Image 1 (cartoon, rainbow, N blue to C red):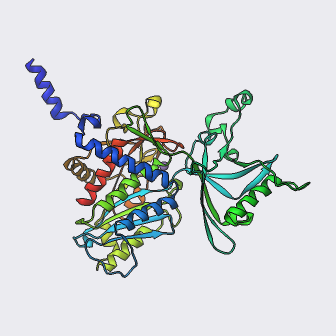
Image 2 (cartoon, helix red, strand yellow):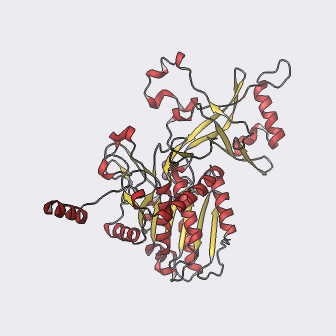
Image 3 (cartoon, rainbow, N blue to C red):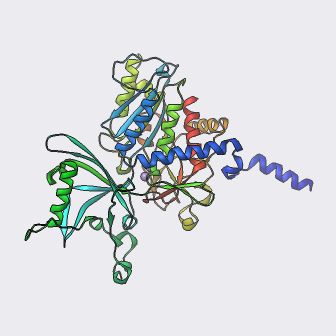
Length: 466
Ligand code: MN
Ligand code: MN
């Protein structure tokens, strides 16, 4: 018996245990977890595209007294500012009491998600059905985007330069759209194909109408009728599609998952389950020591290139402007800064256990996941946080009672992926990945845990407040 006790004590002292987060959550926190989840679901439903996420975030910021930043502004500790980059990315900042030369606390998350973009000449008619041609955005499993209700979001710039916002399929009374699939009865050949080839990119055509414009003998009457409806509703002609950004996204709303309502299913958890907690943390921390900078960025899903993605200089320029206005210099600020690169990780899925290495993967309900390095095939493309910075973040999380775990994306040879961490680390910033584990990542309906979501928020608050 004495020996058993000794082993037990030694185990407690020496072994790393991975308890379920609910066993480590105080009763009074359960209510906060569920309240946060309700706010988050509302954000998910109102912000399915990067443009809508920017609009929703700006509304929250302005309600909390954040002002649009103009270079040359007089700034003092406690000032709350933001800069919007072309309506698709946001940089948010609260000025700290410490000199900015001591660095900023950066949280970076993305607000774009995998979807189907309309091509620039999308509308066509085939055998008296009208359809939209699409070009998918980000890494999708194409078959998942057939036979589900789809909504259309975006913006059309007309010939005269005016901008027309579009959102169809979200209101209960709106129509929705759909990509069709073959009936099993006739799918003998399709079903023999590998999964990746079952549906091709050029088959992701969205069904949008079937009634012809009533005029005898004219061809393409269904297309004409659709154009007529669009002209009456938006005042657009076919040529206006050329200067549009129209995104096809799942039409369904976020829902609780499970009898215990412990999880949330929805479109765009990647990366709204990190960008929303980061936004809320930025708003919550109104008196930071170090200036906080929260970035909600676009284009992560296509590799972060382009002027709204984090491979561009917009973040660097923002820091440089801020530094100058506060009497310092941008590169000195960056070199002294620290960053949480907030992006999702894959959650262990019992259905597909073989892709994960069980000692080093993220689990649902074990908290926000800290990932020292990402990458694929030998850490290619990673920034790999230093042991020192990992240690600092680990101490901070434990001190602030954040429930966290560590994990990497799948088995070494199973594949891999990256985040914006490398692009921020390349600016000479200490950077580490952190995020919420997701089931069915990049699917039209992804799943996360409410406990993990709330602990992501706690992690960002701890980091900004430190
Ligand atoms: Mn992501
Ligand atoms: Mn992603």
